[in-house]
Length: 448
Image: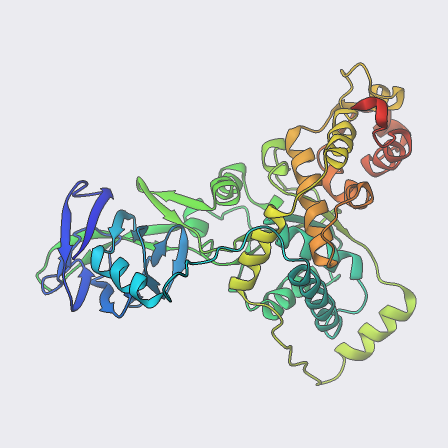
């Protein structure tokens, strides 16, 4: 006999005992387990006892089903787990009969083997897949290989990107192309001065059921996707920009005192036009810091521009091949997190970030002269995490200081703030980061 216990939400503490058969969870009469809440669909999900497990299926519910913070449409529950129906949290215990069936299925004298650590062959295969992704990307986007590489690193590290480039440089096309290659759900929001937070997150509507009972139901906004393109994010007021903060950092949304998990993996790729600043709202430092990378999209080379014109003035359409799926990306993100990194690399990344602070005693003179505010600890986190992702995507299990150096510009350029002296002399943050890389040495033996 399985037990379902509500741990958070209406009816917290209530238990349901489930026996063999098919159990329906919903908010209308006729369901075996009735969860009377606006976030629950009329028939939300089913639980069915199958040999060795309970089978959980989402019945196309509005707010989805999550098992241990992972969105599922169907899965087998073989052990204790936490389930989220809409915004109601429940704990599931499968019962002793499932454990007995699993134990009986094992050969005598054998125990389940658990794989630990990183498999170098697995990482090497990921490196090959990265090459396939870049090749597919190149079938639509001419050039911009560095931009594609940085986007992939941020995605593998679970970060977000701010892309800055002039109009017509295919920023939107790059993001939508990657979404197709990675088989991710993609949504685009054009940020305008009259855009409201509810236009991004979602809103409550008054719902009336068959018995005439009224309740509020949350309708999800475009933020509930895998890849969200926030086009011209600085065109909208800070109130609307702030609606993305919780989604970017916590991968969740709070609306009407309810918590909604976002489907993994979740990425925000925002764009900005560096020319037109009239009528815009510059992103505050707190929001800029949420972006792992600031990627500059520049003009293509002459031969690349000729190829672009030739390819885009015909009726030819490109059918892209899917290289990875959302589930594969979640697995790769786990490998990136599990990949060990040496203290040498961590010390170098931390030293690099600390040297950007003008009040630090060890910072170079040009930092004290040209920087008003340096980078915070999140910059070092992004450097190390990005370096690990870069190594994995290249099929390597070793992370070096060269990986950190390669990502210093996209990580630091939006986290350093120049003063009037630098602005009057035309010195940019890119100039300062390049100078910093030349000035800060790697740790030596005496540093340990």
